Length: 352
Ligand code: NCD
Image (cartoon, rainbow, N blue to C red):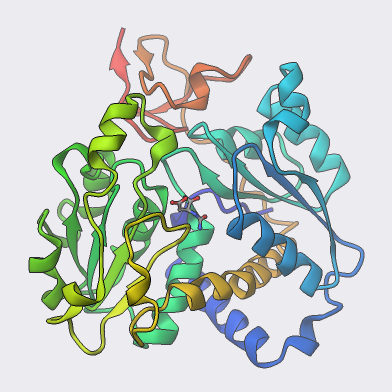
């Protein structure tokens, strides 16, 4: 049984395979209408979502399957104090595959250790969001025709933006990809993302000036400042409008530029960009349904393969100090480390 916790759980060949199936689904939807008849997708959304949850629901329904779940923690037994592990153990018994979103980093890893069905990470805190990345990769393939050699500007909240972390890790595996990291200093890419995916692997520059960067880009990936992850509301107010893309700022952009955004947008893309033929964010959201159909089909077919994460070991000398990591709050969780890193959130642990 395979899971999708981190985009690197899939090889580039497997991602190519999912993109081919998604393209075939777009061309021949009728072929797929009954293929999941009798199968159930559990959607456990402990945190708000529109596109991700509805596109998963639409994906399973378009395959002839059924969906059950909840769309906020308050309506689940979490409100009674149930652990993630116990909730997932139960929903494993009621469904054939689970997509989950949780505000704590590492929650899907904890889930995959107890689940008896494949677990899909639909976003864990400010950490990863691999199914958004599959959507992004399908969009890039359809709009740019390739991954190699692209210059990708990622702009906005690079600190808490989980879609950016997963996109960078996925794109850093292709040849000649360059990144331009566009953010205020306070919202720079976390060290673990730089160390794991960029340093020594990929060319990148940090440039807080969006307009100066635009002419060099093949892809401009805008993101929302992640209000819900700030501990200081004043800091959010100060940073929220750091970048606002509008038609005037695109004056010197390449004619072949692709403008992407995982959505929802707040202010960071003016509506005057929506009619620009280079604005692909609504197509991108639509593609999310097809790549998730391909993903569900792929994972349901991996029952025989054992992929349960057994990495990491307990180390009483280490402590994860990331306040957003599930390992700090979940009762009974095994605190596991690989070297000096917490396996749940990928952040460096400290010696006690
Ligand atoms: C993103 C997310 O949840 O991280 N949304 C999505 O899934 N399309 C981006 C965001 O919320 O800003």
